[in-house]
Image (cartoon, rainbow, N blue to C red; front, side, top):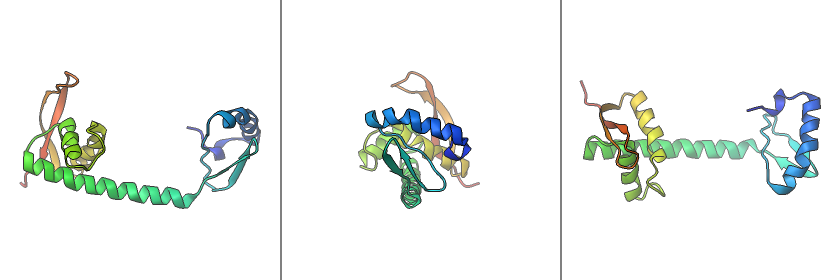
Length: 140
């Protein structure tokens, strides 16, 4: 993805020229590390560093809490797939749906931290494909 600071002055001007029509139809976001106000086609886009920091902090806290719950689930239930863990997160009211993407990234993080391991594989009933079965790593 191109960043605004990587653009030449001519490219920035071309972007302003062509973006005029886009802004009327749908919003666009321009990432500006200088956090300046960019006016394109009469519309000012204000990118605030503070809101980005707040969102990032909240996402990190959510991920840490979800990792703790996933460890609890795997400790209680034994080996599970990412989809099964996601279903349990949803049943406990932690996630809005049972979509596996609510659990898979946290499982990968826990694996990299050495807290869980892959114990095997099984066929996923939804996809018909082999998927990893995760379990808490036992102390050696």
